[in-house]
Amino acid sequence: MMNEHVRLQRRPFLAPIWVFSATALTAMAGVVVLMFAAWWWLTANSTTIIVIRHAEKVLDVGADPPLTEAGGARAALLARMFGNPGVPGHIDAVYVTPDQRSRMTAAPLAKELGVTEIEATDEPAKLAHRVLHEHSGGRILIVGHSDTVPAIVAALSGATSLPPIDALEYGTMYIVTVPRIGHANFVRLTY
Image (cartoon, rainbow, N blue to C red):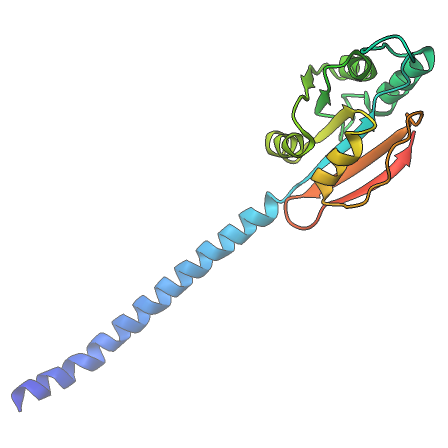
C-alpha cells in the first residue's frame, strides 16, 4: 500500500512539468516554422530573362556574317532600352552565342552596362538551368538565333507550341519571368 500512496503523490507533482515541457517544445517548433516561413517568403524572388534574336545580319556572306547597318541600329536601340546601369532594374548579365552577329548585337549594351558577355554554348535546357542557377533574382539578356530563341523560352517558362521566328524577323523579344515560388510566365513583343 505504501508504494501506491507514494506513486499517487508523485503524479500530480510531475504532471505540470510534463505539460510545461510539451508546451515549450511545441512553442519552439512553432517559432522555428515561422522563422523558416519568413525566410522563405523574404527570399522568394523572381528572375527576369529577356530573350532576343540577334539583329539583322548581312545575307550570303559566309557562315559567320556581321550585322547590317539596320542591325547596328537595332543593337544601339537595345543599348538605349536597357543600358542605364544607374537605374534600378538594369540588366545584370548578358549571354551571347559565339557567333559574330550575336556578339555584335549585345556589345553596345554590355559596354553601356560595363558587364562582360558570357558565352552561351549550352543547349537551351542547360542554358536555362545555368542562367536560373547563376543569376537567381537577377535580370539577364540572352541573344540567340531564330531556332534557339523559342527553345530557350520554352525551357525557361515551360510553354509549349511557341510560334517559330521567321528568317527575316529580327525584332522579336520575349520577357520571361521565373519566380522562385509559382509558375513562370512570358510576354512576346516587338522592339
